[in-house]
Length: 262
Ligand SMILES: [Fe+2]
Ligand SMILES: [Fe+2]
Image 1: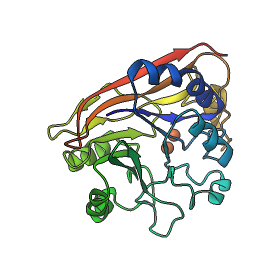
Image 2: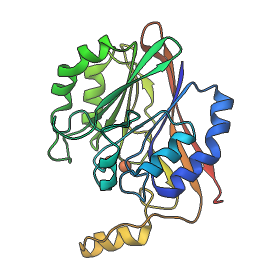
Image 3: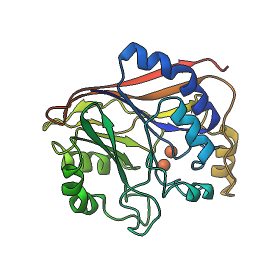
Image 4: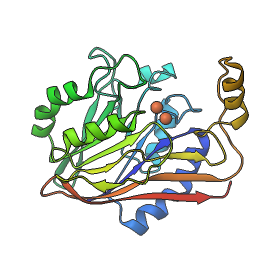
C-alpha cells in the first residue's frame, strides 16, 4: 500500500495548499491513505472541529498532534469521540483523547500511533517506555503500524526510530517544520525521515510572519505569532510504499511542492 504522510499543517495557507494539490497528488501517485500532522492547523495553534472536518473532506484519514494539542481548547469537545484525531500516546495517561487509532484499508488494519519527544519538550513520559507498554496490544489489533514521532532533537528521533525498527512499517518525524533529506529504509525495514516538513507559507518562519518572530527574539517579549498569508505556499511530506504482507516498508520518498498564492 502507498501512504502519503504530510508534515505539520500551518493555518489556512496549509489547509488551502492541501485542498488545492491533494487530489492531483493522490491520483498521480496512486495514494491509498493520507495522514497528516494537524497540531498547527487552526490559526497555527491546535485544532478545532471545523478545521478537522475541512481536512478530512480533502481525504486525510487521520490527524496526529503534538505539543500544540491543547492550544485551542475547543478540541476538548471532540477529542474523546473523534477516532480520526490522535494526540501523543506518551502524554499523561489520564489526558483526554487517544494516542493511537486503527483504520481499515482493504482487509488490513492500519494502526496510526502518535508519540512526542522529551528533549526540549518538558513533561512527557518516555516514548521508549510507553512504546514497550503498548506495542503488544497495538500489534494484536493491527497488521501495519505507522508512527508520527513529534520531537525536536534529531538524535532522539533517530534513537527512537532505531529502537522500533522492524516492529513498525513507518516512523516519520514532525514538529520542526523543516524537511530533512534523510528519508530511508532502516536496516530492519522501517521507513524513516527525521522531519516531514510543513504545509504552509514559504517565506515565513515555520509558517509564521517573519516580523513577529524576529520581534520576539529581539525583545524577549512573548508576542503571539501571526500566520504568514502572502507569497508562495508549499506542501511537504513523504510517500511510503509499505509491504502489507510483512508490515515493513519498501521505499520512502520525500515530496515538496510549491504553489503560487491563490
Ligand atoms: Fe508544528
Ligand atoms: Fe510541535
